[in-house]
Length: 131
Figure 1 (cartoon, rainbow, N blue to C red):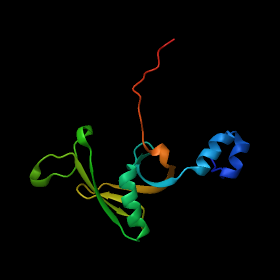
Figure 2 (cartoon, rainbow, N blue to C red):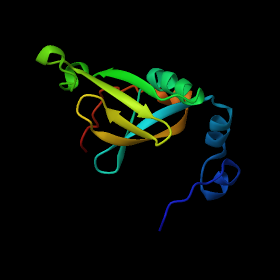
Figure 3 (cartoon, rainbow, N blue to C red):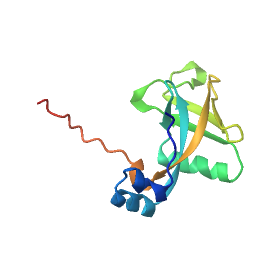
Figure 4 (spheres, rainbow, N blue to C red):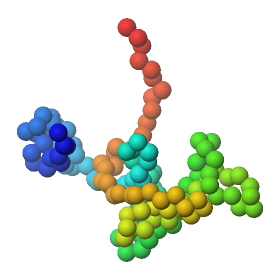
């Protein structure tokens, strides 16, 4: 069975609590740029970077940005053959694709809207106790 998008006015009729619907109706929505990843998953570009990219999209421009992976992984940008943790990307909003400037990897992108409060992840570090 294929999933279908449910308009907010119909959501309470398919089991969504009314209080939750009121919250999302009043929440400020912000654009998040997402990049296709393996296993049919999407990687959400952080909200601050997404805002800058979306501004370029609204202006009718392509966008170029860098992402520093920090201690998570090695980057593809290798100035003077030195390792970095940085990747450089070009997004073509006409074709909705992102290209890694250094290795040529091409991925699709999409724009989603998220409630501003839901874009700041917080992990408590708690692990449930086994019963």
